[in-house]
Image (cartoon, rainbow over all chains, first blue to last red; front, top):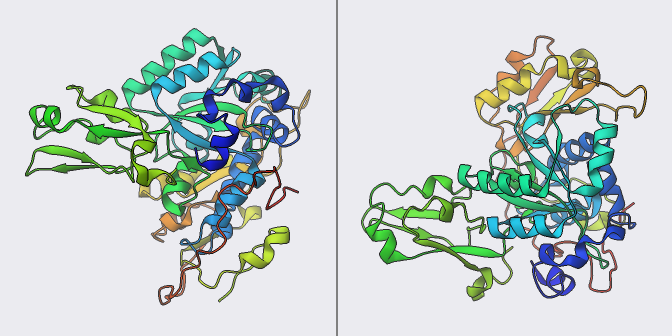
Length: 278
Length: 136
């Protein structure tokens, strides 16, 4: 992530730093309210309350810096896109078990329920106790969680990791969601309002191997429909696909869809110009 | 036109000289009642495309013995979010059986001549842990 998180993420990806999964972090002053709300009876008030205010907090769409900061500091909650391999590592780093719950963003806006959000251990017990009306939630093991990650990857759902506040003591990850850019509220805020702290870009970007791509799908690029961020451009003249690194979120869904192995994920910083694009 | 957003100490930084126009929908919560029993406007907006109408609980529900067992037992209200995606089609107004919604279209205005880009802090936490914008 950006400079602050690189320093406090132990110089690497924050969600792969075992220090951020310490038990005491979830009960620390900055992170406790978010952990408690998302794991308890206040979940709906917390999530929907934040989103119901966004239009009042962003009067000028070209000036979203303050909204970005307010989102981080008021809700102490934000997310980042991760590819499948990192999602599997995150599951290894967590305690089990996980709470598999319905996607709240979809439900709040009238779409049909899907069971797709995996909460980490600090929320499991309180969620089951304080929200008895959520009869569709269930507790799953690490093994089941990994199987689900692979299944969601095949179906074309983004993996994103969400934290309970950035602070000098750490950034505790709290839930891993599997969603689409059209449903996920923070991602919609990112794309409509430019709110960086809603959903951050991943640590990677996709790159196309032009030779393999040219010999592959030709007129029917199957990866393109998987891109949720409009980062892929198809040239009918060259019969080849281009990826815009500035627009790519590094989710890796195009790579999963490519039948010719023409797409790979590379570190975001392989492009010097992307150093501040998160 | 200036809009002040109440965010504590940072108020002085939060004065906007330009407001991006967007429709405003308001709901008469008394006329609406418990939104979760209806949600016709939510469905109408989803079918129309913008999907900017949602719902949330009016108050956090109680915990313990009196905890609600069904979602329908919790009082809910209608919320509007992401109004930049609203085109003002009015399908939600038509869908409401209680006439509780009003739609207000923005006044036409000239595009922003100047865009403020000063003073952007991405997460608000400095290196030493100080919060630029402290939580309440």
